Length: 210
Image (tube, rainbow, N blue to C red; front, side):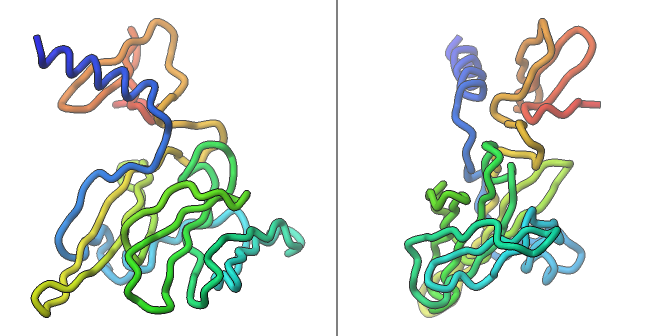
């Protein structure tokens, strides 16, 4: 009975929770998903919605239109120290509100373990642990990975964190609250919450299960 109550609670939480970047797992070492681990280190070749200045000089991230290279927006952030770099410029992946988001990482000292996610309005979305963030796609789903390191007994230790992200890159899509078919219900199969109707089964990302 208690197990059933927890399952029902999990279903409600999956339905009504705000979409957010969520830590899923931590590995010791530097995990890679590509046959060339250095390609994984520097990230996949996903195209950003705008050209952008990788060096966030004076805490400003500049986004440029692709068609005429004009300035779309200059986003002011509080990180005015030298050494901050811009990563992960994307739309509807780190959030689902159709706003461009990006990560700022302090590469000046090489010792900071904080990654700051902002949107194009200069609002802080979240702060993550790590030094090198990159997006990957596994089974048609985006994930965010970060690397970090620390010292233990004079030895350098590395960690890899994998985060879920709320968006799938499409406007109006939200993996926490996808549009479900009529007469659908949520089921738990193999520790995964699915949306099921008489004809088809979907993941919470709105993807059809084959």
